[in-house]
Image (tube, rainbow, N blue to C red; front, side, top):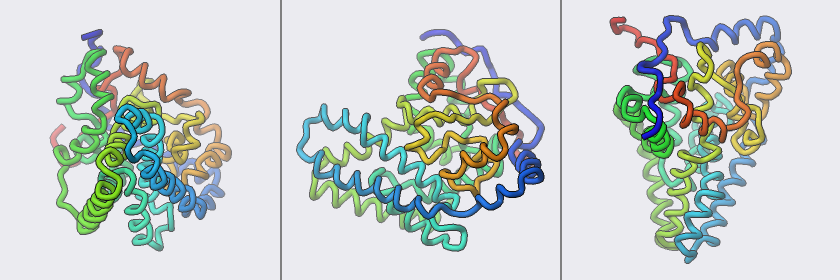
Length: 321
């Protein structure tokens, strides 16, 4: 089973999440960062191009061998679909068309969701904004692993399987930890996605549908681009709960690696997050950061000091300490 993790509980803190206070300090010193707030006019074209690439791949993948389907799903389609998931992340913050056009953002989210195969754009927004506002809250922040996950996957081999199964945890954990009634737009998202999937299967066959959905799931698990799931908030250095990564995979993930910058300024589009770091380097250069998402996955699995327990948690408001 491999070495057992050294931690037996999460890292509990009674301080507020760090980003609101740091945002205040940075804006006091660099008020010009406010000029970066808003939406990115280039974003819709980049995300649309990714969707159209996957539409073109429907014709390429038709009648291919299963071996080729899975190879391309992991090496190509999954990468595009993971990028589209992060496009939905940008859209969740209204960074496609701005806060003044919320429905335009939601509709574009439906479009970007199509190649992913699973309806997620609206549900993701519902939970993700709470992750920002209540980072580390033991109930509200569903990005945190549960005790069941931490206790079951507490060895080297267990962590390997936990990484592979990340898609399932991200899909089902919110429904168990913090269930919410479905919104009307979630139902619309589901109907549109089902209709698209039906068209794909009818005209292109099940293999192409497998290419889309399996690619999405594989690229959320043991895959370099999925390293950001762990790199963002798992405690690799004691006391630090958010980490940035400034490597080349940001080019295909809308700069999600600039994660401290993103949590400090969620109103800044991903394309402009490097500008935040350039303006205020003293707030980011000297805090722990990652250089490789692949290395993050390797270290997470093999290092006994890191595992599902390596997260900073806060008691939910209203609960006894």
